Length: 105
Image (cartoon, rainbow, N blue to C red; front, side):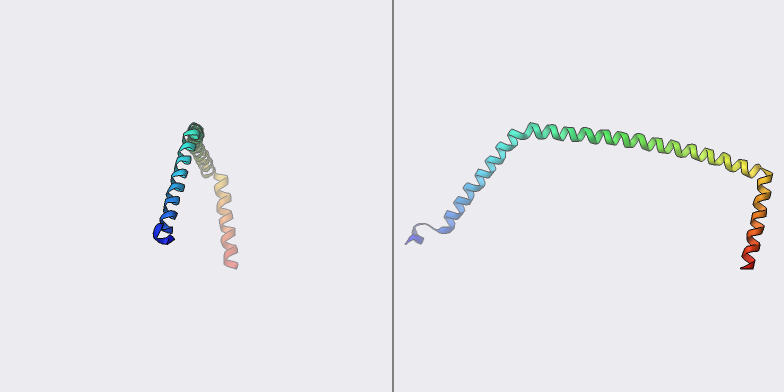
């Protein structure tokens, strides 16, 4: 008799709909209440990420500039050593000694 009057799944379904609608309304209320706070938090994170990005760009430019300076300094040192005759003689002597050592092995 009870089953012909009310179906259990229909009660369960209506409770579920009521429960879902309650949660939907509660989440809407929470979103409305905390929306300014979330917006401020999101803007703060965006500002921090923007600053970090600007710092990274600046540091990349610094690295590129320093690499160029290092390249110029290395080029000057290499040109000095290759022009210096004493260094060339020492380099040739070291190569001769190293080749003699390799022949012995």
